[in-house]
Structure formats: C-alpha cells, structure tokens
Length: 350
Image (cartoon, rainbow, N blue to C red):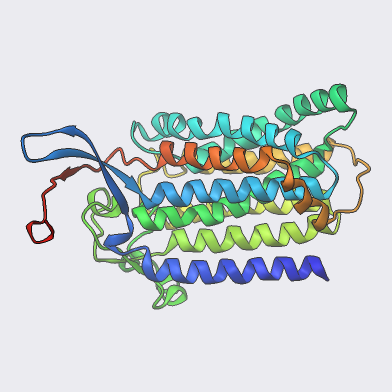
C-alpha cells in the first residue's frame, strides 16, 4: 500500500510539473536565466555568458535520478557509498560523451545528445557494476546484486530523462515537426496541444525556422512517456520483479526513442534512419540479451523506508550538491547564444 501511495504521489507531482512546463516553457522568458559578465567589450559594455534554464533542468534531473537510484539500491540493502561510486563513474563517462557523440553524429561542436549518452550508459553499465561488485566484496563482503542494480539505474534514467526533457522545451531544441506537415490523424490526435515557441534565440528559431508555428510537442510527449515508464518500472521493482523492471524501463524507453524521431524536425545526422535510432534499437536488443544470460540473485524484499534511510550518509548530500553544480556548469552555459551587458548608477537612489 505504501509503495503504491509513494508512486501515485510522484505521478501526481510529475503531472503537475509537466502541465506547468507545457504552458510556460515555450515562452521567450524561460530560456536564459542569468547573464554573467566575463570580459570587457568597450568602455560601457561587457561580454556576457548566458546561464540557461536548460542547464538548471538538466542538473536537477540528474540529481533527482541519482537520488532515486540511491533510494532503490538502499531498499534492497546496498550501501549508499558503493551505489554513489557506481553512478558517479557512469555519469563521468556519459556526460562528456553527450558532447563527443553529438560531434560525431551531427558534426556540431556546441550541442549535446542525451540519446547518445544513454546508449553509452547501457553498454558500459554491466562492466561498471562488475567492477563495483568486486570492490564491494573485497572491502566489505557486500556484493552488489547485478539485476536489481540494472533495474535501479534504468528506472532512475527513465525518470531523470523524463524530467530532463523539460530542458528541451525551455531551449527549444529536440523540436517536433510543424503540425501543418503532419498527417491528418496526427493533427487530430494532438488537437490543441501543439507547441508554439517564441524567442529568436530558441533553437527551433535559428535552426528550424519554425518560430511562431504550431509544432508537435514531442519533448512533452517524451517526458510523459518516460515518466510513465519509470513509475511502472518502479512499481515492478518494489514488488521484487527486477528482470521485468529492467525490460520495461530500457526496452520501452528505447523503443519510444526510435519511434519518436519520426515526429522530430531537428537535425539528427544523415540518412532516413538516424544513428540515434540505431543506437536505441541496439540498446534494447543488448538489454534483452543481458537479461537472458544474467542469473537471478537472492535479494531481500525491497523496503522504501530502508532506501530513504540510506540517504542519511553524510557523504550523500555533499555528493549530490557537487554533482548538481558540475552538471549545471557543463550544460548550463550556453555555447550558441551571447549577451552584451551594461551597468549604471541610479541617480534617484544616491
């Protein structure tokens, strides 16, 4: 009963957040959150660095995902510090890879790809867990159960990306096709829920040329799908159905990733079937193969209370704050927009 109440409360909060985001974030005033002077331009103005809501949402989603991972791992008796080591190593590989893979696929130096980063994460996670298992067994004789750990990571990924997609609404990236170019049944299905972006610095404006046009709200659709998949998978996990939780969270999110690109209009590399769609299909097949060969492991019944207790380790809040700051500094400073700042004294307040 408590598990269902917890998941239902999360679902309600996510629904409220997504409803607010769909109404608010396509607007021009929800892209740049601050501009910081970094160099003098002339006697009266400064060159500014733009800090974005994109970075705020991405960093917040990473912290949320890691926190959820720690809770789910703690729920089956895993130490928070070992779990934290696993996820920090994984993020240390995947966050930089989001830029490197975008360069390889899209030939752009100043963009990020979550699809590419998640693909790398699916590939390397078993190896990272194997190393963590060896360390945990030798140090404390507390092995990390492979399948529950995979399930925890995949649930955290689904929910983290579900919230992180709000960043794409804010920046106007990962945008959908104009509704006028879609088939009649898609237009009927979306109805009056299409997005209309405003602001010349939105990516949909300077790259897609669709500013002011009604487009498929693909970012919100992906957010809703991923959050729903994550919550269903969490319910399975708390019911000790770990194999099913992995299968649902990874296979369904990657299937949606491959299918949803047919509704996107942003550049995804050459070819009718993009590299990111190939990555998604490979990740789904790879995950099913892993589940076929991995053995079932004895783990205690999941306890949310034990999972929340695992967060009381004093290392955890420091690590989460440091992670949030690091991800914000990496993703929050806009590489494609600039600003000019000037400062003056208010005479009437002297």
